[in-house]
Image (cartoon, rainbow, N blue to C red; front, side):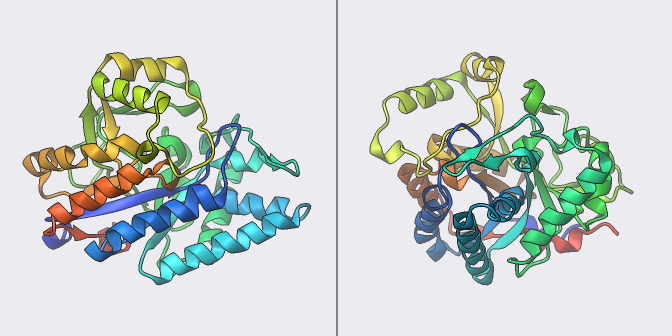
Length: 342
């Protein structure tokens, strides 16, 4: 499988998981979605940056479903739809992001009662998976000007892929951008293991994203990865305890907690992390790019983030990175439709 060299050389992609928080407070659309994206675009639009928005379509489904009893949620649904239509019309890409716990999450009149017991798509039976992917994709196709063919698993949880592959391929979803080299979580609710993935710019696969299959029906376009030392996470923990205004996230909710081992591993051993513009991680993007150039300059530099986790500092730092690297060309996933393997 050959690729157009120009699509990969000196190119980057910025993908954002467009979602609320999944802790006891989900946050609001205004603070966790609309405002951070507005601040980001104010900073980077002049550099020609277009966004790939992996939209948590289950949230849109929940707004419609619960809006039957609570009309204010239908107003929120309309506001989200208008926001996404506006972004798509401006050339930003919309693709599929699935957090299926919204199937079990309900609104109590004041807030969302979040139920994450079925956090992974794998927790549903095959018929339900097919239905979820079909409904969620249809939600997004309403607001997207581009074709929806790409997927990112909620919480990076796509394994075992063989259990969800049929639901994706039957709905025309053939490109994945979930994997990041070295990624690993032993949290039973959010388990994934990408410690043995290829280091190719992209690859085809069938049932296991860690294994190349040249006749596979799926393409993996991985998120760029970097190794972070425990010192970085100690700084991160310190900054959260003693927040400066520039490091305060725009988002107004709280995160779903992982098991203690997940946090301890980061504080005491070197770990791999996606290259990200979330919070202090944005300051690591320049060094990650230098390593990317040395290691794999024929791959797109694939950066991710979450609007809810952006901060004034992180937005400014990423803007500075783009201004320092004017040679970089921004790509969106729609630019890679030619990679379709069938």
